[in-house]
Amino acid sequence: MFAWLRRLRPAPRIPDEAWQATLARYRFLAERPRADIDRLRELAAEFLRDKRFYGAHGFVISDEVALAIAAQAVLPVLHLKGGLDWYDDFVGVVVHPSEAVAQRTTVDATGVVHEYEEVVAGEAMDRGPVMLSWQDVLASGATRDEGYNVVIHEFAHKIDMRGGAADGCPPLPRSFRGTSNSRDARAAWLAVLQPAYDSFRERTIVVERFGGEEPWLDAYGAQSTGEFFAVACEAYFVNRERLRSEFAELALLFDEFFTPPDKR
Image (tube, rainbow, N blue to C red; front, side):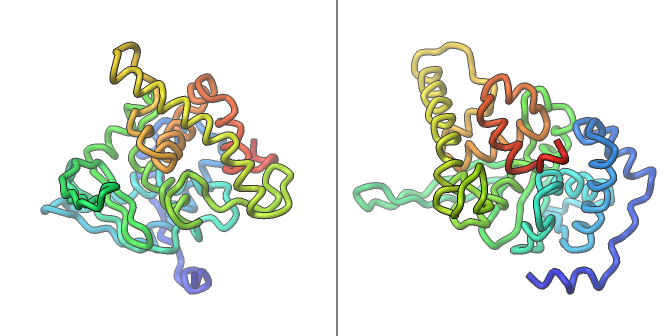
């Protein structure tokens, strides 16, 4: 929305020293092809131009904080048509020093309202700001083996929400996987995502009830297809080879959506 207005203001120049420090901390960025790294730097600068960062509970937003978040946030849209237009439904990024407590309200099948607290490392609000724990953002530089990345998780939700509810199916090109309309494209997507989610959820339930080896992906992804999509996106962007070994068809599906053929 109003993308032309953003282009009237030049993006800030990211100093070389700051950019190199960011790449050194988050090696999964530095290991991408040179053309991708250059594009990441360009998109990160535009992100810094367009978004507003707010520190919660006295947390101070430094250049290091803003750049670390920006560089990781733009990775999922690196090759998507429209680029940062996928994130044009919000401006604010709220950063907490560590995990935050969110108030939740649910209504069960009988109509009874339940209120509870949930400790979260991040949250993406529909047409609203993104909240992140700086402690977890920093940890993303050392948790690639686990496929964990809170920034990518929350911004994957933002991509998902472009199609409405965060249900694990982002807006797709009508020709996705050879389809000719949006309905068939969605069906083609869910034909891969849904079985992967069902299998993952069953495995996590078995581990919870009977013990055994924990799944590699974060068990939080078993909550819903929307959370599974976000958790799988984390792994895809920081440790694609491990994701491919666990969910080969899902990795290929993400390739087709996130990376055009000429960029693979």
